[in-house]
Each structure stands twice: as C-alpha cells, then as structure tokens.
Image (cartoon, rainbow, N blue to C red):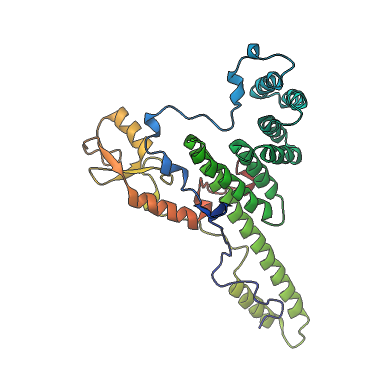
Length: 341
C-alpha cells in the first residue's frame, strides 16, 4: 500500500531492544543490577559509603612521599581537583604519570576525570581506556569510560556508544562483589539506569526521525499521483501516519499511582508498609515518624511505628523500570541532554 515503507516499522512500537545480560567472561552471566533502591534497606543505619566521584588519595599526606614519586604529584592533582582547578590538576597528573612511566592505572583515571570536567571527552575516554588496559579491575575506570561514552552518545546519530556505556557501567558494578566494594553498587546502578533511560530516549528520537522521513517520502509520491485530488491525497497521508504512528504526537508518560510515595509524590525506591497497610518511601516514613510521632503521614491515624519491606511493590517498581526506562528520575518536560553522568 505504501511503496516507500517496507517493514521498517513494527506494530508494537516502541522499537527498543535492551540487552539485560552482561557477559564478563566465559561461563559467567550476570543479570543487569536491580535499581539502586533494592540495596538500600538499611542505608540510614550504616555509615555513609564513599563516593565514587571523590578523589581517594586526598586523604593521604604529602609528607609520606617525595617529589620524585608519582603519588606525590597525584595528591597535588587531587587537591587541585577538589578545589575545582581541573587544568592545574591535569598538569599534576601529567607529572605523576611521567614519573611512573605510564604504568599506574589510577593516575590515568584521575586525569581522565579531570578532562571530563573541562569537557574534553575525547581525552577523557583515552585515559579511561588506558586505565582499564593497565588494570581491568579498576572499577572507577570502567565507570568513567561508561560516563564518557554516554555523554558522547547524546550527540550521535546512533546508539552504539550508549549501548557500550551500559556494558562498561555494568562491568564496573559486577567488579564490586569480587572486590568487596558493594557500597559502590547503588551509585553504579544509578548510572546504569540513567544510561538505559538515555538509550530509550535516543531510540525514540531516531525512530521519530525515520517516521518523518517516511511521511515526507510518501507525501512526495502522492503529489506525483495525477489521479488523486487534494482530498484523496490528505486521506492517504492520514492513513499512512495512522499506520506507522505520528512522530509529533505528544506521548503520555504515566507512572502507576501505587508506585508513587504519598509523601514525596515520586516513584518509591525503597517501599515499606506500615501495620495500617499504607506504603511509603522508607526514609520519608522514618523522617515523618521522628518529626510527628507514630502516626500515619496521610491519614494521621496512630500506628505502631513498625514497618516492613513491601516486596510486591518493590518488584512491581523494578519490572516497571525495566519496561519503562524513561521513568527513572522522571521529571515532566525533561530533555535527555540533561541526564547527568
């Protein structure tokens, strides 16, 4: 019926395919991590974990090293990085790398992160790759590589770099268990789901571009049909748009109300249910009880103060996010270019 379209669209749009399995080596299959909320059941009861973005060697003293050692200059670089002077930090990292004959993985990762901060994604990527080649178990190097690839993927006309970014980020998270650094898993999961969200938006953008081009091609074809009048041409193009979907039609982004916390009005990361049967975000419920006493935050009815993980809602949230990556940290009117990595 439509000569310019040959099986390029499916009826079950959107056409987004996600590889939810990462294969780090022969015989090992690791499922994509659960959303970050699944590992935070007791996060308010334990010390705050270290941040992957922080420079760890700042805690070390310069007095422990001499100017002939690379670590000395790396500490100076870390100090400059923490102050926001990334250009100076890069100069210090250059010296550290030079003194160690380019053999220290962490120095390349640190310099790469500084390059990322000043917007030099190409050099940041090169440093991340070098850090990985020197030490394939460097969690932060895989994270940096994934972050840079995701940022670069925003401006590409394909999804290759975003898909590779997801693999890199997943590899970083997989390494946590073997190195007993599970405290990084939540932060890494956040970046993985942001990357999947970016992939969803990018696929939608590319699919809409295909649709617009197909509509234009078919419109041009109809203009050449001398056997059709304007009304017939309009009916033909309308039928064509209905068959493939209107790329300019506003899409509804709806999150089921039972996944939304009644306190934060956001999708619940760690849902718990009170003895009254109401489900809330765990941290918000704890805060409400501490502030107002053991009463239900919405109904104001007395409760015991005890609550339990709502595994059904947690599973439902997990399934919803896997099928609707856009819902992670969703804000109305958001632009994928603003997703932070």
